[in-house]
Length: 113
Length: 114
Image (cartoon, each protein chain N blue to C red):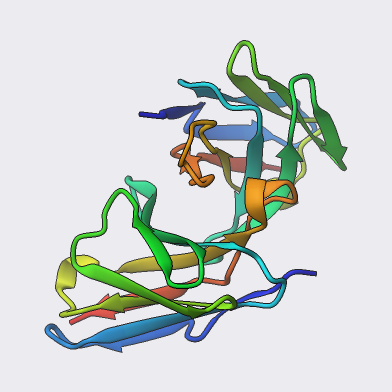
């Protein structure tokens, strides 16, 4: 089975901190994604990457950046955490064209205080 | 812009009953995905529908895709309490450069009562 591993299930950070969320997949997928999920707003795409060092903005990239130095790892960076970034963050990956579906990690619940 | 609409958003069922969740989307796509999410958990893949007319079944759940009508259905047969969860459909656009970004419906919160 494909595994997408997110490094932390729960994180509590202070306002203004730089926060790193890590995601690793073990099936050589080209495409990787970061979503955030909020009650009433559903899942929204923050950034995605279709190859090493390649990235594109999603629907809500403000306040975030990403890094993909190796194919298996996609990091989401909150440059200066704010309380409105408190959310559930979900990483996903897929082969080109999504023929076998998209696999999601277990999620990171981030609280910014 | 691709829009994905699910209905109903809330569904309370009795055990043993049947019901259907609908997923409509606004632009051309030839595939659709269904996910299940339990409270506080991540998304679990249920079905990958890759072509017009695709039908897949797993246990009490059956999903179908009509790309011409831009409609997918998730049919629940003889519901049991264990099916209580939130169900999402997700669609990637078929446009150049889309790189298969998924757009999700708002989700259907299903509660199955004894």
